[in-house]
Length: 567
Image: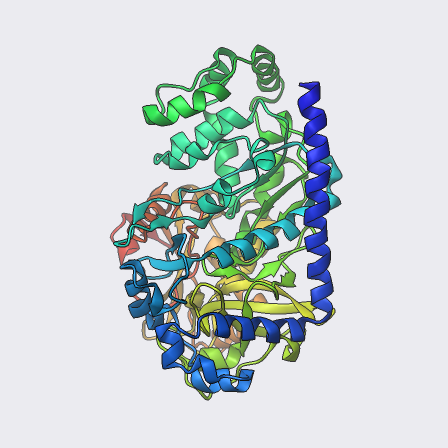
């Protein structure tokens, strides 16, 4: 063990030196971000000029950004779907150079029932790994106690199913984990096989069964709700968890396939000392949570947009551990690299994709992003952005997406050299406006956080839905347990919405909008709805995002069928 530890420290130091060099090159690139973006666009167009898409849009004749802008319209996924359908059938030339290899199609749920298939090429994978390396080395340097200690990472399978061409389709987190360096994989608390556990409870239980006896330094997943579920699962099954840790087993009550159990067996060691420590924690605290059995340096997950609503819950389970946002990341690519704790803001990932930005006001005025945007709409380069302003992202990447409408609203928070710092606010589909109030999901979450902070009572799950009527209003769906604890929740949220959105306050005072209506649902109803939506959209539990604000009236028809009581 001592020899292995020494070898790991030597290898770890060498790996840190290599990744630190990559990070330094990224920070230097930020000083000349404009030129870096120009060079990247030139390379991308040249690389795929022989694709059918490239020929149709004259890539071989494009000599400047102005040429690119004039020849290639901005379009959402629907505009690429015919080309991607051909990719799925094996016609690589549809969007990419004829000899390009497609490693997988990353699935993402979007807002429709049919998932999106995002092609992942070796170039996209390499860019993602470099960006994660930059993020990781900065996080560990800021938290040196985390170096060469264990990492709890939640991933999903990259091979959910196969396209007609035989290429795997699934979560890019699975591909990233499967191609991780062996040294790093040794410090993951869960082997790759855990990603293939389909039952959510069993997966969470197994992750914690493997992780609790380890010296975990940091926990990482996209959705912070996953970390809260992990902590609750371990505590709710603490008796069985302690027995499994003592005996070196994995409960047979958990429906885990035998082939997966066989792969986990080498890690299921007996640990009576850990079991006794957990029993003492329960005897003293009445429960066992990560703050009691781990010495965490930091936690890593999304902090921006609606994800901030979960922040108030973490001290109860994880203690006062700093949070490092993992960045604005989607199946389509990484958009930002955060470099500080406690903020969703990060440096624009200028070396990964070519970026354009549409002013939020123009994007909203253009209407539904399900169709191509008008060629006359304003698009700005990163150097043209203004601090404090909000924009929608358009990207071009190495996976065949050119001027792709992401539908992500971001705010510019500052600058590092020529590279803007951006923070994610919301998706375009998460904006509602019946009387000109233009209420965004991030504003709704901000308002609910104000209510929760004032009352000291958390509200983790709710849905706000616009309702047409002689005078329109918003309907707030919460479960009965929440409504019992906060009988004035509807009125308090109505007031808080006016505080965070002046147009909402104006429309309420002018009687263009009625007060928020509170609707009590049976306990568990919203969780069941989320699970049904997740299954319909073919999204993993880690990728799925609960939608707090429905953008259009009549989208809450399924909730109207649930037994409820209106106040």
